[in-house]
Length: 156
Image 1: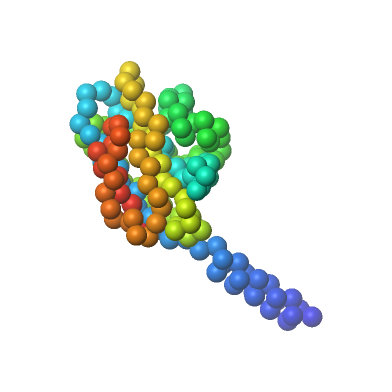
Image 2: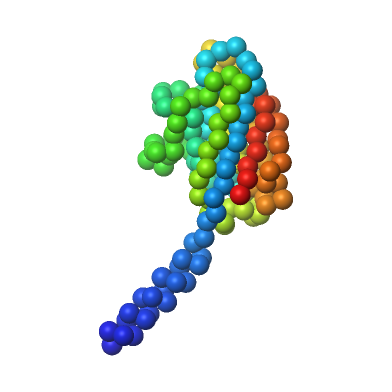
């Protein structure tokens, strides 16, 4: 009986690990030159219907300013526990933010979008500064932003 139980547990673990696969993705965001303080950014995923799915990274560590990342703040409900540990310093004018993380394969080539919201103190907030479909074909292609983002790309 112990042998059967052990074999069954091993088989279940093997099946589950095959279904929960992920790959490493690098998200690179280059900001335009602008006069002002460092920018806050939220990089997140939405599904094909535009509904929020997951926060990937937040640049800027003072949570009191997160409400200015309007699309992300509204969609995520600012659930601190969800993005805890997914934050870093704000990004200065003309600088590049590069973040590498693991992303579930279930998001790739299935209608999901990567979105970037940006905000700078005493300047304009940019909801959907960048919106790109998350596809293997789109990896490595530059996308221009509509606000503070000069160029955005992702690579697997």
